[in-house]
Image 1 (cartoon, rainbow, N blue to C red):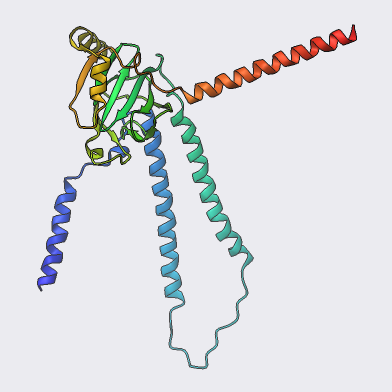
Image 2 (image 1 turned 120 degrees about the horizontal axis):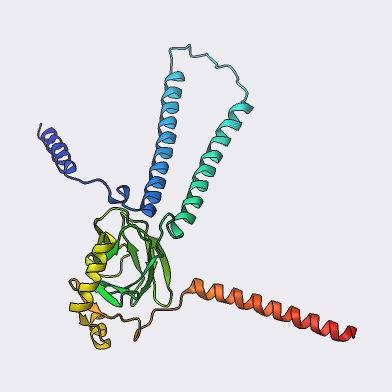
Length: 305
C-alpha cells in the first residue's frame, strides 16, 4: 500500500508540474528562419511517429496471428517460401523515408543559411562576440555597442557576424532560428529576422566552463521607428567605449546589461570573414587565369607575326 501511495503521489506531482510548462520555444517561432526550423522538427517528429506506430501495429498483429495454439505435439507447420513483393516493399519504404528527410533537410539548410526573403531593406549587420561569460554586440551602422542584450527592428533581415574572444560558444535565439558557433580567428555569419515585436531569450548553447549557464542575453524586437528612437537615445546618453574599458569587459566573470557609444571594432577588429576571403581568392584566381590566357594569346600572336 505504501508503494502504491508513493507512485500515485509522484504521478499527481508530475501532472501538476507539467501543467505549468510552456511550449518549447523552438516550436513557437517569431521569424521566417525560426518557422523553417520548427517546420522541419515537426515533419521529422510526425515521420518518426508514423514509423513507430506502424511497426508497433505490425508487431502486435504478428504476435496475435502467430501466437502459440493448442496443436498436437507432432504438428509441423507448412513450409512457406519467401515473397519477392514483401522484400521489395520493406526495402523500398526505408529508402523513401531517408530520401524524403534528406531532401527537406538539404532544402531547409540552404533556406536558413540565406538572407530571409521578402524584405525591402538591406540586412542590419551586428557583430556578436563572446567572452567568458558574456556577449558583446557591435552595431557598426549606428556606432554603438551593447553587452548581454540586443535591440533589433522587426521586418528587417539581421545579419550576425559571430566570433569569440575565448572558447567556442554557440549563439542561439530559439524563437528566431538555429544556433551557430562563435569561434576565435574565424568569422561565421548567421541570418535571422523577427516578424513579431517582443522579448526573446538568447543564450550560449555550448558548454564553456563554470559560468556557461549564466551566459544569456535578451533580444528586444521592435518596430523600426522605436528602434531608431533607441539608437538616438543611446548616442546622446551612453558613455564612450574605450580600449581600456573593453579589456575590462573581456575579463572572465558575469556582468549585467550595459550600453556604450562607439564599438570595439576599431581597436579590436574581428577576424577575417572566411567566406569573403574565399570569394576574393576565387576572383583573384579567375583574374590570374584570364591574365595568363591573355599573355598566352599575346605570345602566340607574336610568334605568328
